[in-house]
Length: 134
Image (cartoon, rainbow, N blue to C red; front, side, top):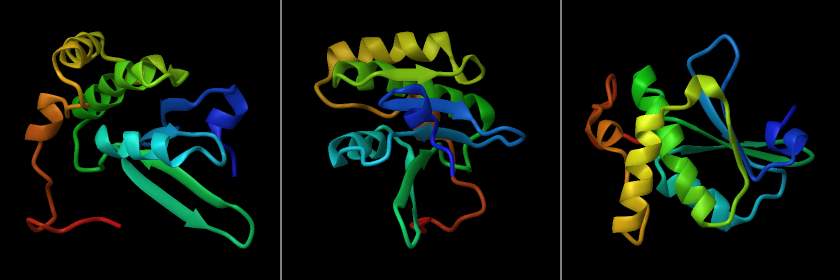
């Protein structure tokens, strides 16, 4: 099972999984809980796959978001991750320059990460209120 953050030598690699609309945020094998929790706080959903060997951990943009909201979520995370000292690579097809500017402005005005407006406003379709995906 490949991990782009391990392959690329980054703390976080954000990309669209080929042939899908899934936006991944990969972290290196054995990434610290602090980094994983920050990605949780930034709106990504943590995924865990235990195996007889290592436990695989990655994050995805919530599936109920549309393409633009997924791009905004992915890009919005970058300045917060940089501020925390992490090396981030984000693919061009999930980059949104306006979302980056908004996040950088929010970062200067707040001490904790905030969810992008478009992501916070996007309804979770197909799930009852209060239902959580695990």
